[in-house]
Length: 123
Length: 232
Ligand code: FES
Image 1: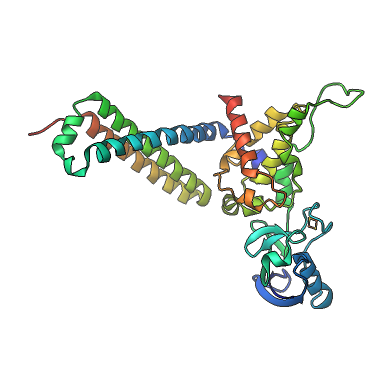
Image 2: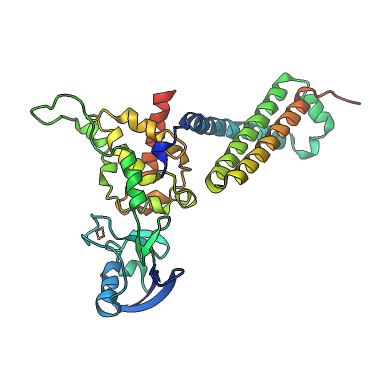
C-alpha cells in the first residue's frame, strides 16, 4: 500500500473513466445504427465496392465511420491499458506492452482514418 | 450430521507451502461453520488456527473462504454449505498460520482514507443535527465491520495489492457523504488516484462477498461520481 507516497495521477484516470462511459454509450448507438443500416435496411448481398463508394460520397457517412473507428479504437486501447496496468507489474514488461499497445493503436487509427478521409472512387 | 472439512493449513515454521488437511465433525445443520471449526480444535486437533471473537457476525474477525466464497464462519450455517466444506484463508494478504492472515496492510489502507469525523467548527453544546434524509445518504456504509471479505474477494486486489480496496472506499464513503463532516474533499482527493477508486473495474465480487449486505460496488460508484462532480 503506497498510496500516501504516490502522487495522485488521478486526473488522467478520472478522464479515462469518464471517457469510457461516454464513448461506451456512443458506441452502442453508433454500432446499432451501423448494424441497422448495413444489415437490416440493406443486407450483405447488397454491400459491395459500389455501395461503399456511394456511401463515402457523403460527408455524413465519412464522419460516422470516422467516429466509430476512433471511439472503438481508443475505447478498446484504454481497456487494454487498464488490463496491462492491473496485471503486469514488472516495469520493463509493462513499458514494452504499453509501447506495443500504443504503437499498434496509433498505427491502426492513422491508417483507418486515412482510408476514410482520402477515399477516392476508382473505376 | 457428519460433515467433511477440508482445511488449508500452513505453519510458517515447518511448512514450505500450504496444504489441505481433512477432518470430520458431527454438527447440527443449524450450527455454524464456526461451530464445526471449534469441534475440530477443541476435540481433535488443537493446532488448528483461526480467528473469532464475537461469534455473532459483528467483530469481523472470522472472514474466510468457505467453499470458495468469502463469508463469516460465524454467520454461515452448516446446512448452507454441507456436507463438504472447504475452508481457506481470505486471499491477497500474507498467511500467518492456517486460516489467519496478516491484516496490517488492510488497516493501513483503512487509515489512508481518514476514517473519522473531521469538523473544525467550534464544539457545539448540543448534538450536531442532521436530517433523516442526510443520515440516509451514508446509512448503508455505516454497517461495515471491517472483516476484509470485500477487499479480499476483489480480483483486482489479488492482482495488485497496492489497490486501496473496496473496504477502505466504503469507510471513506461513510464520512464523505456525512453532512457533518468537512474533509470530504480531502478524502475524494486521496481516492482520486490510480490506486484509489479508479482501480475498481466494477466486478461486483465485493457486493456478493459482504456479510452485511452493503452495496459495496454502488458505494464505490457514488465515490467516483462525487470525484467527477468535484473535478469537472
Ligand atoms: S467472530 Fe465476530 S464476526 Fe464472526
